Amino acid sequence: METNNHENLIISSSKLLPEVVFETSGSLKIEGKLIPDHVTDFFRPLKEWLMNLVCNRIVFDINIEYMSNNASVQLLNLLKILNSNDSVENIIVNWFYEVEDEEHYETGLIFKDELKKIKFNFYSYVM
Image (cartoon, rainbow, N blue to C red):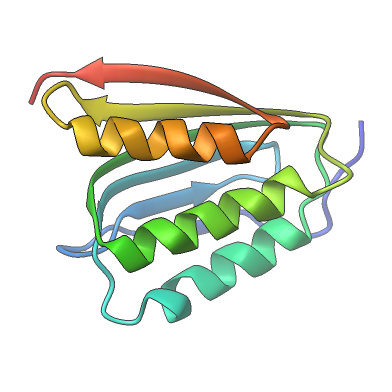
């Protein structure tokens, strides 16, 4: 198995930003609200980290309570980086959404249609 030469990326959550835990083992998580003031600044280090990730298998848990439209576009771009990473052979995204939130579920379906290399699992929950 190939290994990374960089460190895990961990960002603590805040009122408007999610917790981010990207481990070099291929375990990735974004959880919480995603309403950054400067969306490109928030996603820049995440994108750079994923561009340099060398890992055969990734499991990415995405559990966003709410995200702005700009954040949604940036999240899709983040997933496109994973989708085009040649070192990654197997990508699973676990997409969590509140059972009443049809829009968030549909966003996940749109992402699934655009990202053919990534296997999506959808999990609903009740708040």
